[in-house]
Image (cartoon, rainbow, N blue to C red; front, side, top):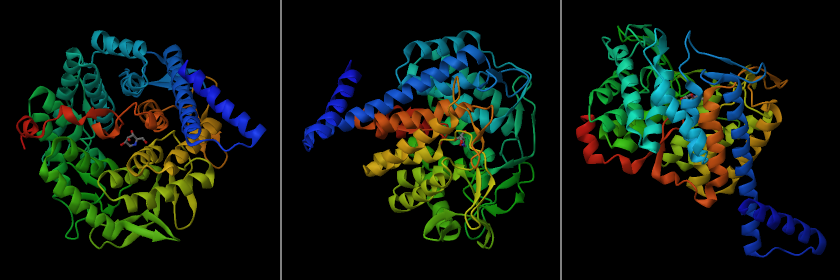
Length: 472
Ligand code: DMJ
C-alpha cells in the first residue's frame, strides 16, 4: 500500500511537472526521492525473491544454482548447502520470514557436516561458518550455534601446522588436512568468524587459532613493512614475494581492521595501521589522474605489475570505514571509471596498458559494497547513483530467464551458466541496503559485516568481555 502511494506521488509529480512546469516544493522532492528509493529497493527485493525461488525449484539442497541450464552444481562430491546459508542474512534483512525459517529449520534438522570431503578452509570459513554465526546472531536459535560450533571444530585441525597457518583443505569427517601452499587471504582471514565463535561459546581456542595464523603472516613482513602473497604453511617461507591488496590477499587486510572494530584487540589495530602505512607508501599508484593499488616487490617496494582484480574494489570501503575518506573516494572513482568503460567490470585488468587480462564478471559485489559504505559515510548521493547504474547494468547484461548469471566476457557480454553464492550474500544485500538507506531500515553504524557481508551487531560484543572470551 505504502509502495503504491509512493508510486502515485512520483507519477503525480512527473505529470504535474510536465503539464504545469511547476517547480516541486521541497517536501514534494523529498517524497519523490523516497518513492524512487522505494521503487529500486522493491525491485531488488522482487528480483531476490525470483532468484531464490529459482534456486529452490532447480537446486534445493545443493550448493549453487546453474541459471542457464536450470540445474545445480556442488563444490564437492556431496553438497554443503552453501547458497541458502549465504542467502540467509540477505533474506532476513529483506523481511522474507517464511524463507528464512525454512533455511533455519533445514540447517537444524537436516544438515550434517560429517561428510568425507576435503573442504577449502578459506571459502567455508567466510561462507558457511560466517553464515551460520550470522544466522545465530539474527535468530538467537541455540541449535544454529551448535551447528556453527560443530563446523568450527571440524575446521580446527587445519591449523595444526608448524606456522599456525592453516592448510588449504581439511577433511570434514576425518579432520585430515592437506595443501601446504596458500595465498595470504587463505592464510589470514579467520580472526572475525573465529572471534565471533569464541565470543558466543566462551572458548578462546577458535580466536587463538585465527590470530596465530594472522600473526604468522604479519611477523614475516619485510623491513619496509610489506608482505608477500603466497606462503608455505610448514616452512613459513614466502613462495611469492609480490605485495598487493588484490585477490589472494584482500580479506587479510580487511580483517585486521574489522576484527579490531568488533572485538577491540589493540594488537590488530597496530597491525592494521602499520600495514596501511606501508600500502599507501609503496603500493598506491597515481596513473593518469586515477588512484590504483598495483603490485610491488615486498623487499624493495618497486612496482612489478599494474595488473589489478575487481576484488580490489573492497578497499574503498575499508579505507572509508577506518577514516581515510579522501583515498576511498578517489579509489572508488577509479573503479567506477572502469565499470563504465565496459558496462560491467572485468575480473583482471592492467591499468597501465588498458587491457583486460581476464574479462569475466561473476556478479561480484565489491564496487557496490564500497559505494554503499561511501553513501552512508559521506552522505553524498553520487554513491547512491553509482549503485543505481551498477544495478541497471547487472539487470541489462546478467539477468536470465529464472535468475542472474555471470558474464564470460565483458567485451561481448556473452553469458556463462554460473551464479555464485555471494550474489545472494553480498551483491543483492548491498544494493538493497543502499536503496533503503534513507529510510533507516538498517542502521549501518550498529553492524560490522564479515567479508561475505554477513552482519554482526557491534553491541553483541562487549570489549571487556571479548578480552576474556577471546583471550587477548
Ligand atoms: C567473496 O566471497 C568475499 O567477499 C571474498 O572475501 C572475496 N570476494 C568474494 C566475492 O567477490
